[in-house]
Length: 311
Figure 1 (cartoon, rainbow, N blue to C red):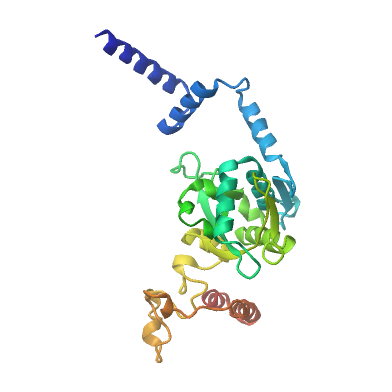
Figure 2 (cartoon, rainbow, N blue to C red):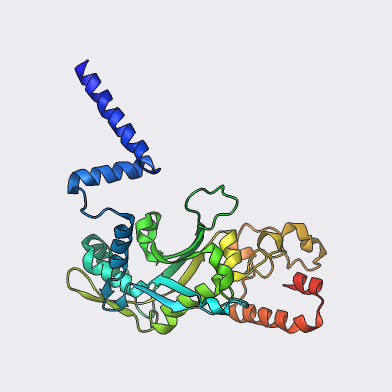
């Protein structure tokens, strides 16, 4: 009975503790309490000090400069005075820092480097993933805390990509602030890709890093592909999305079934359903650029409704 009473007392104590603090998931609270048992309670504990600790961490210097940086963005019409900025975690600086301080990650990269050495002729492939994150109450009618987040990783990480710890946060921008940026997420992706492949020669020259073992390696990488849901795809590429006749930017012959375009096509080149990649007519970069030029060229002579359909 005494053992049962002691257990009940401890459970009541844990429940009172949980109710005295803001909502925290059970797994998060359990992790915090276990870490406190192992390492003790930190001397600093205020929200301001937690923010200062975060700022100190992202302010870490590496051989490729500070981990945390910012660039100016082109403002949208009517918001020229806002001078929007894009705050981001610099990929090369972060990777350099992680390889220096995280031994297990350094060993993983070194093993992967031996299995598939990235060269200019056979580089690794960079994956970009974007999505909207909704902290707090997702049912609020107006949630200004929604964030457009962009992450990156390497396709060569293979099955490890199921582990969120190998997806590196690149940037996060409040959704409510996107209207102040010309082009919205399109400009943000343009800036990010310019950093990775234009400012720094990731693909051709490669980027050198030092492993925890002291070994110096050079990683070559090229753009692999984007991972996005329909909403993110629409924001970045400015497609019509689910309401458009063409829901895929690259597929020249694939149209939505509701358009009945397939019935009007005499030679059968247009399809409204596909189960194989071989069924698709994939547009080249040159063809995509030409389509954009053609749409812009038609704008001065087309009425609004006709132009909307063409777009």
